[in-house]
Image 1 (cartoon, rainbow, N blue to C red):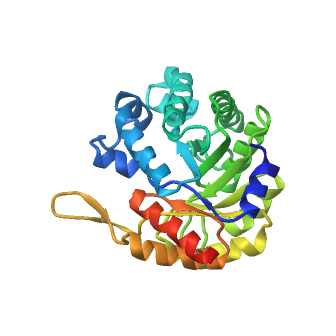
Image 2 (cartoon, one colour):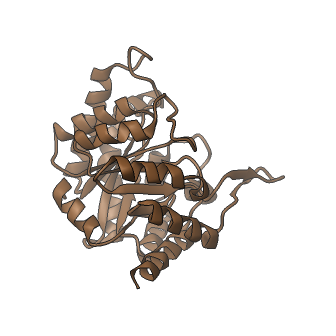
Length: 294
């Protein structure tokens, strides 16, 4: 799917994404700190069950969980030799679940290191890593790409440039931010968004970060700064650790639906859930979209 086709899809109504992957894998037994891509291929039934539930809940786009399957991140884990395998086999797994009618987004993310001259990550190495992953995901049959949980404008621009060098798939860009719109590696998402649009992003917005109860001002400012669709894929509130060491999130499906309705009113038109959300949250968003269409 190219950028124009994606924007046409968005013009026909809000787009419903999926919910969390990582927190649900942990609930299913994945050890914290492990390579999620490797764990997924060792436990495919967990992903099959989760993604099947997202499709049933109404997700129009499901992310192939190739989150950190780029050369830089995998090299840090001593698994650089698995990059091609992860970016071929994980999308194949997702496609076998969602079928041909639900769109599959190849998932890409930050390498976690600041670019030179602020940090030690070279532009050339990051470009090559993103280009390799984008090419593999396109060849694996992804309908579009998502660069999510990005930490600054610079890495988003490198990702877009790299992807455009190997494929014409639409690329969505999503940053993680604080409540005032600041990004972890510096700058404001409201300033980055127009530059990301200029570089060809099909949609731009925020994910992870916080709960939807804290994001209305950022979404409103993004809507004012760009003409492309605005993404809101937020956490189920804030994480809380119980006496047993379990992480729980403080916003349930009903309140999540209510706050996401406010984000839609503020201008978000590509919506979903991030950490702590489950298929029940996505089902609530499906109902929200139907209610607003009446």
